[in-house]
Every structure is written in C-alpha cells, then in structure tokens.
Length: 507
Length: 133
Image (cartoon, rainbow over all chains, first blue to last red; front, side):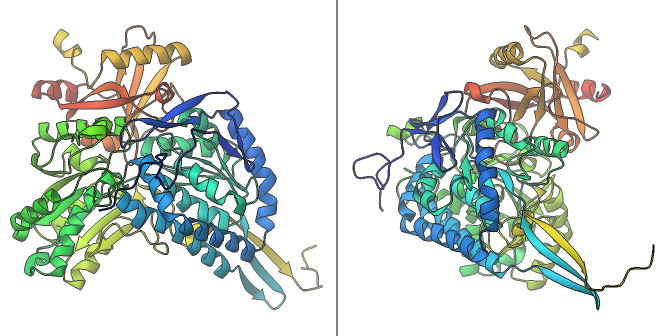
C-alpha cells in the first residue's frame, strides 16, 4: 500500500493554489463581480481553495478572448495543432501522479483509479485526436467531367462546453481534445462541485496553447452556465449532465439555432445469462468483477451498471458470489492505493443516495448488503461515504428506473432471452449496457437488441478512445470518444465548382 | 371532499419553503422541473416561472402553495418519468450542497432534493381520479 500525502502537505506531490480566478485569454482574470465560492474536498469535507464566482460579464470576456483566438487557431495547420495536442499529452504524462492526486482530492475518488484510469485515459485522448486530425480528409465528388463538389471540414469557431463533476479532468478532456483538434476555441465551465483540478491541469499546459484558445470560466450553472449556454456567440454547446438541464440547453440553443451535443446519463442494465456459471473459471471471475463494477467511481458514472439482470437458472448462486465479491471491496482513505471506493463528490449527492436507500426499502426491495452511510472515522468522518449496496427487487421500482449515482445496484431475475431484452429496454435511457455470456450468438443478438449506445460484451467500464460513446433515447445526442466527434465540432463547406466555360443555357 | 383536497402528490418542507420565500423575493414567480439521469439528475430544478418551457411531454403534478410566496410554485415532470414515479409521494426538501444544473438556489450553498414515500392506497385512489393538469 502507498499512501499519498494530501495536496499542500510538505511531502505532497502537488499543491493547489488557495484561489482560482477565471482563465481567460491566457491569464488569470478576477471575477467581474468580485465574488468567490469555497471548494471543499469530499475526502474530508474541508475547504481547500476558493474559486471565482463567474457571471455573464465574465462569460462575455471569455467569449471575447475566444473569438480573438479562434481564427488563428482554426488556420493553424493540422500538423501543428496535432503537435500541440501531443505535447499536452506528453506534459500530462510527465505529471501523471500529480494530476491523479489533484483529481482525487477534488472529486473524492480513489487514487488507484485516477492513477490507472482517469489520467491515462485523458492523456491518450489527446493523442487519439491528434492522430484522428492528421488522418482526417475532406472529400470530392466528380459530378460530371467539368463539375466537382469539394467538401472541406471547417472549425465551428467558438464553442461552449459544460463539464460534469464525476470525472472533472477526463470529461473536460473528452470535450476539449476533439474541439481543439477540429480548430475551435473553447469557453469551458467546470462543474461548481469540482472546479479546481482542471485549473491545475491548465497550469501545466498553458504555455503549449495560444492565449484565448482555451478559456475557463468558473461558477454556478444559473450564473455562469446559463449565459454561456444561451449566448448567441457560441457556435455550439456541449453538455454532460442530466435531462432537465439538457432540455433547457436545447431550448436556449433553439433560440440561436445552434447545435448541441448532450450526454444525459442512463440506467444501464448488466445482463448475466445462465451459461456464465457453467464453469468456475477465469471468465466466471471476470463476470463477478463485471457485476461489482457498479461501485466503480462510487457509482458516479453515467453508465454505472446499476441494474443487474441475472437469469433464473444461476440466479441464487451467482448473486451469492456477487454479494461476497462486493463485500470484499476495500474502503478507506481515497489517497491509499489499496482503497477501491472513495467518497461521494458532495454532500447533496450523499443525501440523494441516502434518500434512494430509503425509498428502495419502502418499495419492498431487499438490501442484500450495505444500505447505509459509512463513517470511516478520523478526518474522514466529515467526508461523504456510502456502503456499496445491493438491492434485490423488480424493474418497476424507482431504484431500477432512476439514476442514483451512487454505489448502488438493483438486481432482478429474468427467464429467457426475450425477457432479458424486455427488462433491459424498459427504461427511459439508453447509454450503456453489459452482456455476459459464453455463447457468441447470444452475445451478438443481445448486444444488437438492447437500445443503448454502448453495449459492453463480456466486459464493462472500458472507455478507450476510438470506441464511440453516447446515448439512445433519453440519454442524449451525439457521440464522444471517437473520430466522428471531430465532425460534431466542424462545419461542412461544399465548394461546387464548374470547370466548363459554357453557359448553362437557361437564360 | 375536505379530505380529498388535502391529498397531494408533492409537499414542501419548512426548510425548503424558507428557501423558496427567499428565491421568490429575489427573483419573482418560480417553477420546479424534476430532473432525471446523470450527475445532478433525480433532483428538482428550480427556475423562474416560464424559464423552462414545458410542453406535451410534461406533466404538472402540483401547484405548490408556499406560505409567503404569493404565486403557486408549479411542479413539473416529464411524462415518461412520471409514469415511473406516480406511485410515490414527493417532498421537496433542502440540504447543504454545491450546485446543480441551472437551479436557482445553488449559489446560496443549498440544494433542493426530493424525499419520497409510497402513496397510500387511499391517496392513490384520490389522485388517480383527479385529472392531471
């Protein structure tokens, strides 16, 4: 076990500034309103820095900077833009452990995850889009021997991005990397729950980007997010969050006729067919881990496999083993490398999870393990911890239908293939799903039948660049993590060219 | 009938009512739209009345009468979500918190949240008879 020293301690790898202003035009700018808000770490509940409380004036200033920078950045040759992205990745690689520490302190997640997943994935994301950009080509169509349609990719210009708090750095990078690769300037608003770690990242990479290409305005949704989302000066808004705000952003965008991409969460089914239990081998072990993935990142993942559907033939044995596996989850200080599940990101998040633990039991679901808040003692008593919880119930219950965003899974049995698909699809959402079977035919048919943008097949919670990620149904619009995201940040310019000197003959 | 008019789908705690009074005084008429999905989902979002445009995909659960707030606070939910929530009674509460979507109370360091219980059989019967507005 390694225990990392908390940021700011004498032997810590990094420390945060005591205050973060807005990052606008390549420098820190105090908020026009002069106000700041406190930023606590979920690990202990203690405030570790204060952050500028942005308003419409700050957003306008950031948009000014972005508009000044966008034409130059958009004209920068693809090779040069890709080089910048690769250099950002290299810089992050050099500072991987510092970034992981910052992210854990900011969000509460275990450092084991930030070291092995959040930050390495963010690094690779920049590299992927550097490569995707280099390989992107326009097209031409020869319409006849004297007429050619050329298609060019052009940047949109200035885009707005609103980032969630569950993976503050990785989610920022998911949106920044394709937008920057495509040649846009960005105004980014981090979540008010987790505003600081992206500034630590910015501090590491600021010298690599021309001023104004990336601007960060902090603040609350209603004060800073709304002016950004409703601005006629952004060419597109990208948002990850929940359905009501997603709809509101679409409403604002409709006023300005701007495109949006939205990722709005899910209630992902994780389906375990009988044949998973036909042997007690590596695959069986992997499937049990796949079940337990509901606790990854404290369950604060849009694709949390929060509905486990287990076929009746192996239901009791598999579930018993899954409960045992869940009970082996190591809790502890998020800065210990042995800790598997850390703190929920905020007090209100904790309260919401606890309210779902209540309604689940009121609806008659049975708690198989967990079910309560967790007090880890000492300095962690002020933090926001919940026991990994397994409910057994039925798909119509609220705990099966709403995203709890905590380490909570709801388990139900199914009879056969058709029953599995029916239950899996009985949800408003369609972001992720898992299918576990030893039969390739079953895997294929289930994967195609489940209405979700990503069906993990005999795996779960992998987020590699080059695999498209996004939602069906209420889960949103657009795809991230894939080269197709470049086109979500580009206009198509068609030049329709005649090489004939002859008049058409109409007039 | 007196009993029937006392049956509601949505209630407000005194603490939440106090926040609503402050928000009303500062902003004017208010509405809620219950969110779903990721991150800050499953929480009620509080807006200026009319800020969020409701339509045929929404259900008005209640016009909340809040002491000290002159105009009722409408409480909306997407119709699909309502079908999955309709067997539960909702209470708008407030807890110390940090932000959420574009909801009005977030900068005050508090967050509205929903506490739920099952409707009783009697309540369900009364509410199912009452047309949704």
